[in-house]
Amino acid sequence: MKTMKVSVVSPDGPVYESDVEMVSTKALTGELGILPGHVPMVAPLEIGSVRLKKDGKTEFIAVSGGFLEVRPDQVTVLAQAAEMASAIDVERASRAKERAEQRMKDAKLEHIDFKRAELALRRAINRLTVAESK
Image (cartoon, rainbow, N blue to C red; front, side, top):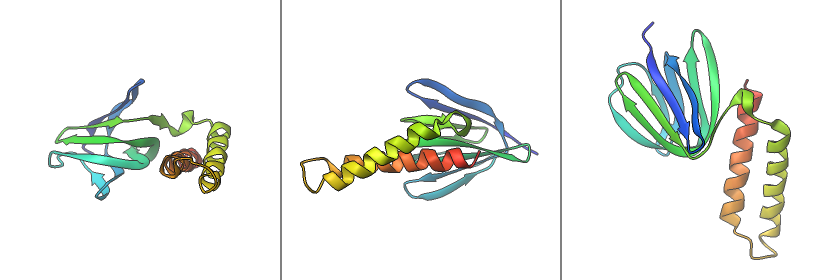
C-alpha cells in the first residue's frame, strides 16, 4: 500500500515522524481524511486528535490546534501542543479537567475569562479521549 511521510511538530520539538497510509483529523471546516497523492492544501486545526493509520493499526496524537499542510507525498502538522496517546499522563489530564470545570463555575461569580476556561476544558477532555484510545 502507498504511504506518505507525516511529521507532527510542536514548539517543544518533533512529536511524531513516520510513513503512514492515511491521516484523519478535524480542521475548522470539518473532518479531513488524507491519502497519499492528496491535493496540496493548508488547513487550520481544531482541538482534537490526529489519527494515523499504519500497518493496519491506528495511532493517536492529541493536538491543541495548529495547522495542517498537505503535499502529495508529505503531511506536516504544526501544532500549538501535541502529545502521543502513550505519553499522556491521564491523572494530570483529569486534574486539568477538574480545574477547568471549577473555573467555568466560578466564572459566573468572579471576573474569570469563561472562554479561556472553556478552551482548557476542551484540551483536557481531548487528552483524556486520546489517552483512552491507545
